[in-house]
Image (cartoon, rainbow, N blue to C red):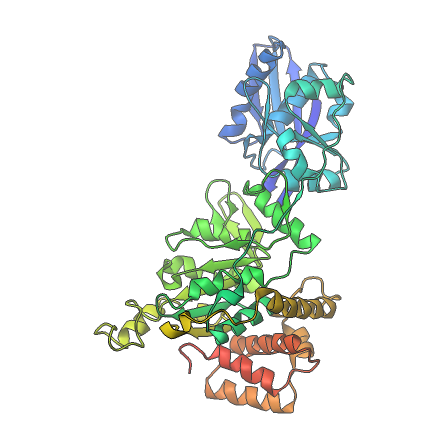
Length: 503
């Protein structure tokens, strides 16, 4: 007779239920695992044999077959150890079969029977809730999984505790959610001296999630400005926090089961590969663009990234998701992020300073920024030149607005967008509006429309550029608390569009 248990296989942030079937039959002693397991899953039989021996349980001299259904779905990861153990114990009548079928289990076994934490407990708990089953996981994963309040989470320290729970000797208490992690301290915008235009661009970018390109000489403060964007962004909503945490759970980045309400800030080095930025590699894991979901992706020395890496950003920027295609599977991850890129104006960095520029001016600048393809450059809503700060200004006390003051305006603008898009659940900020919805919310008044048409013809804006100007103008109007997009809003949006290279 076949005993059953249940676990999950991960496809992006989605967890698909997998039925673990175990049959113990007469025949030559053998222990086989079938159903397209990877190496880690196949090795589960050796870990399980040692863990059972540590408990004083010997496997019978029979043929043990474990099937992972559906059999054509790839099974990857060590989290299959615990569900295989549960199914086997049920087949050996050590634990009741009906109780084994009532949970979704995941966890890795050590040789002494302890349960080792694994990645993906949060999406696994979501799948268990949808299947109307409890989740059985290692104790270290319980606080993370318990954030899904729609299902019971049982967190066990070892396999012996699992047996005692199923046999009624010592039931496991339901796990409690982890703590909401306090926001990490972020640098304050008031510490930045000068750069008023760049600060304004940061405010607009944060309010509407508009992609931003900062171009300036080395040491002009580009990285300093970018590091202060998290201090301007509102905290994650509960829905956004759950979405972001599911991705970080798959990447093993959740700290002791705690969920943060602070938006992620990712800053990969320019030597990063395509798989590191977009996702892929072993198990087709999430990349930096997905780890920055609902947050900020800062790419310093932007033209130094490989051209292939830069061009792979184009489709995710437009669609808000990335599909990692492999020979046997297509994995999908969300990636709605705010891209902030920083670049020097040329290879030597001093294009505008004749005393320090190289002999190849202006060709040096054209070649260097030319590494950013036209289609990718067209996707930056805001382009800002960051001039060097005069030495005399560095000695002045900080006098600009604090991050808290700017963040209050950003939060008010975001609140207006939340109310505006309440009937459009797939749209959260102005940067995502398109088509008829964009025309409805961002059509400027007569003077603004005339200015936008003149700018589009004069500077030969693409259709994408035209619509991105409209989105930025809508965000500027939201920051001003205006219902109608007017000429000043359009003028400022056009100015930021043409700040680098187009003017």
